[in-house]
Amino acid sequence: MLTPNPPSQQRPNIALMLKLFLPSALGILIFFVPVEIGGRSTILLDHMVTGARGLLGEASGLYALALIMSGAAYPLVRGYWNRNVTERIFTALKLLGVVAALLAITGWGPAFLHEPDMLPFLFDKLVIPVGLIVPIGAIFLALLISYGLLELIGVLVQPVMRPIWRTPGRSAIDAVASFVGSYSIGLLITNRVYQAGQYSAREAAIIATGFSTVSATFMIIVARTLDLMVVWNLYFWLTLLITFIVTAVTVRLPPLSRMDDSAEYGEPEAVAGKRLSTAWQTGLEVAARAPALHKSVAINFKEGLVMAISILPSIMSVGLLGLLAAKYTPLFEWLGWLFYPFVAVWGVADAAALAQASAAGLAEMFLPALLMAEAEFVARFAAGVVSVSSVLFFSASIPCILSTSIPLSVGRMVVVWFIRVALSLLLAIPTGYLVQAIIG
Image 1 (cartoon, rainbow, N blue to C red):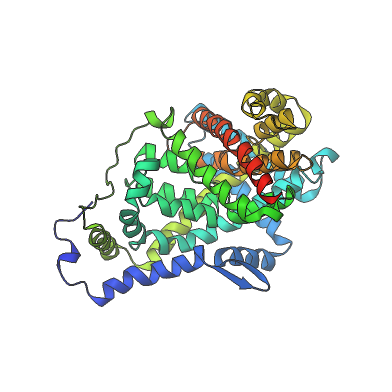
Image 2 (cartoon, rainbow, N blue to C red):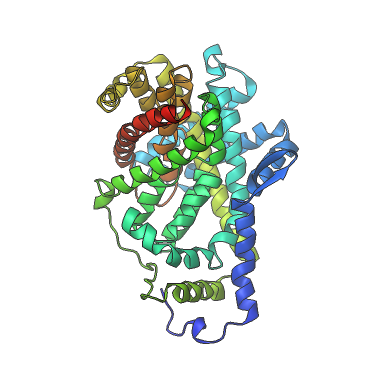
C-alpha cells in the first residue's frame, strides 16, 4: 500500500538505493544464478546444501532425526495438537514419522521397508535434503523478500501475471524460487507474504497449488529415470509450459475460483505509462521501511526452522504410507481408472499403466517416473510431465502447505490435484507425440 509521502517524490539518497539493490542482487545470485563448483553447475544455495551435507557426513541422518522428533513434539508442547480433527490426525502421523525415521537410521524392522524405493528413498532423497534446504534457504530469503525486490518486480510483471493466472506480479518471484530452488522455499515465501496481508487467500492458494512445483534439479532426476535426457531441452521447456497452462485453467475452476480474494495490502496498480516509475517508487518504499538485515535473517530463519520440523515428520509417515499403498495395494490402480479416459482418447500404448502411474503421483511425485521407466517414449514423456505439473503429493508438498497459514484443506487439494493431472495428461500425451516426431 502506498504511503502518503512516497520517497520517490524526493530525490532518493544513495544509501536507500543501495539498501534496495545490494541485498536483492545478493539474493538473486544465491537463488537464481548457476555457478560451477567442483565440476558441478547449480545455484549457490544448492552448493551450500551439498556442502552442509558433506560436512555433516553420517551425522546428517541424526540431524534429520532431531528435526523430525522436534516436529513431532512441537504441537504437543505448543498445545494445539487437539484443536481440530486435522491437527489430531497429523500429530499422530508425525509421531509415526519418528518411528519411521528411527527404522530408517537403525535398519530395524521388516525387510520390505528397507527396499531401495521405501525408507531409504524417503530418508536419503527427500527428508535430509529438505531438512537442510529449508533452514539454510530461509537465512537468505530475507535478501529476496524484505528489501523491495519483490514489490519492484511485482509491479513490472502485473500485465502478465494478473490476466493469465489471477495473481499479483510479485508471485512471479515465488514461482521462480520454487523452480530454481525448492517448492518448500517457494511456499515459505508465499506464506510470509500471505501473513503480511499482501496476498489474498485465493492468490496464496493459487501460488501454492500452481507454481510450487519441484525444482529444475529434481526434473533432471525424473528425466534420467525415464531416459529423457536425450530430449532434455524439449522436456524442460514443454513441461514448464504445460504446468503453467494447467495453472491458468485451474484458477478459473472451483475450488480455487471460489476462495476469498481480499488482501489487506494489495499490490499497487500502475498508472498507464508510469509502470516503471511506480515499480521504482514501490521498491524504494519497502527498502525504506525494511528492518536491519540481522533482524530479517533471524525472523526468516526461525520460520524456516519451524516449517522444516513441521514438514519432515509428515514426509516420513505420509510418504511411507503412500509408497506402501502404491506397491502393495490396488488403491492407485483403482484411482487410475478415473484418468483412463484422458489417456485412452489419444490411443497411447500403455494407457492403463500410465493412468495408474499418474494416480500414484498423489502419494509421491516421483512414483509415475519409477512406474513408467520401461514404457514406450510417449508414455514415458507424459509420465515425466505429470510428475512435475501435478504439483501436489502427500509425501511432501501437501504436508508442507498444511504447515502454512494458507487456508487449503486436504479435500480441496485433492480436487485441485485431480484437475491438474487430468489436464496434464490431455496436454502431455499429444506433446509427447510431437516430440517423438521431431526427434524422428
